[in-house]
Length: 427
Ligand code: SPD
Image (cartoon, rainbow, N blue to C red; front, top):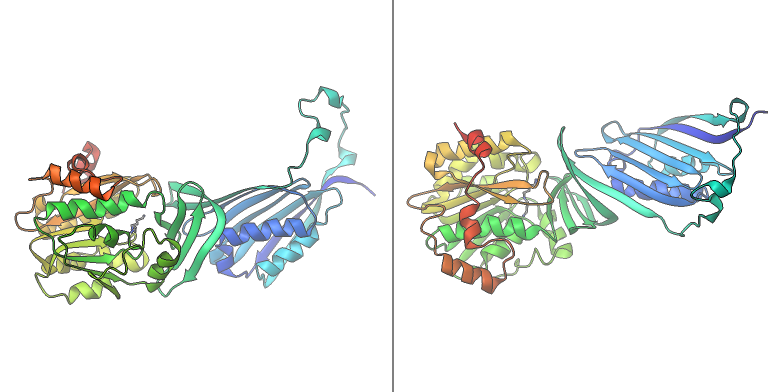
């Protein structure tokens, strides 16, 4: 009988649970556990999640590897287990079949490296740079689990610990709180990064303070979306504010952030806040004309429940609900990631508020694809984005509130656009 260096099984797992097939943390755990069940020594794992769906990963073991690629939309996983020595790959196969809830499967087994076909080159091991018998297994393995927010052509990936604090499919979207190494805990909605502990202030300070300072006296403020609470936290720093109404469609986002991101969800108990779990699009349609000084649209990207937050009728209703010197600011997407949504939103705001009344500001968010993001404005009456600006009181506020991103120079500077962005926005 011929002998071989290794044994390779190639497995098709079909009709698996699609949610498991899209869960990078669960798949990494199951693949590592399958290796351990088969008594392999795990050295390293690297796993990526691809937005909107799909997971790829490898577990490197002292006895070779286990690898996987999933297509959640087909409930399918392509798995291969390569072993050498005494390890029994079929133990890993059985374990994964159960874990993925595969209703059907097939597998082929191949011997790899038939010794009859190979010529052995004996060498003097003492001349090798790394002597095999000196290698000591450190007794733990390193994990590389990656969350990727991407479109067809570019991506942003964050390495996370594999720790999942919250994972719930609400009627609107999948709501998750994961832990990234670099940016701490992060809120992800349907595989898109919304905010993280360590860079949330970039976004929340820049959606709030420019608008609050360009308005002469903001008292009545409406926030649409913003379920993590960061935007209302910033708005409520302004002592002249009398009422803030926040309308978030998804109660699961609020609950997840209250429990796991309390520094962001810090102001939900403020007596000036009226918190409504409701559809912001319907809310603004029914709002009384001339009600709000400032409206902040802190929405997700234009897919799923936030799609309507990019429509002409929504912004016409916002215009009507603003007072005569009102300010609207909306999450404006990125000129380098989704140019189409970025431009279309600005054209909508120009059409409704006027050509010179729809300025755009840029700011940096390290955890959004490309890092370059925008807020887009609609200004009514005499309001101007940058003039007059009381820099001294702004910087006193910045100092006393301990702000970490916004200041008076940045207020003005954020409206200065690179030439390529100006060209993109030309109508
Ligand atoms: N691509 C991400 C756009 C997310 C906008 N909303 C973030 C919510 C922070 N409060």
